[in-house]
Length: 166
Image (cartoon, rainbow, N blue to C red; front, side, top):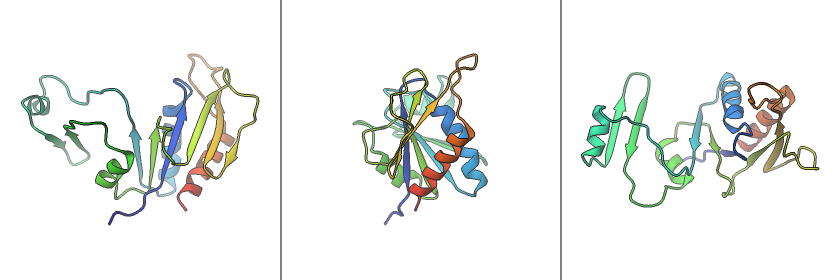
């Protein structure tokens, strides 16, 4: 039986700062001793391997699973002939040694989520917090238009994620 692993989704329109926020939060969670997993979910396609590399040639020749490993990391490419596996299936098969999984961009599931709006699309409502939803606003006043978050936002996000872990 698989252990329960909490999941928090980070959602928002393109270029609102989802990746930026996740990149800022991971070191804060690591500093507290958590093991973190991330999933970039449900994109139309991606390439993780490159033409001419041995593993690419293995996959191109028809291998159903191709792995490459070193003393520091492991990558596995698995052929799937159906729709994308569910987040639950991905976690159960690959994340059992993780304390929390942050999912970027998947809002059609029943996980707690952090919704990011940028300062140009902010709704009339104030930033909202409830048990399963945190809304924050990124600002893009810097050049080039890189989303930024306040220390208060990061503190709220950290608290929200840790609450989801309980």
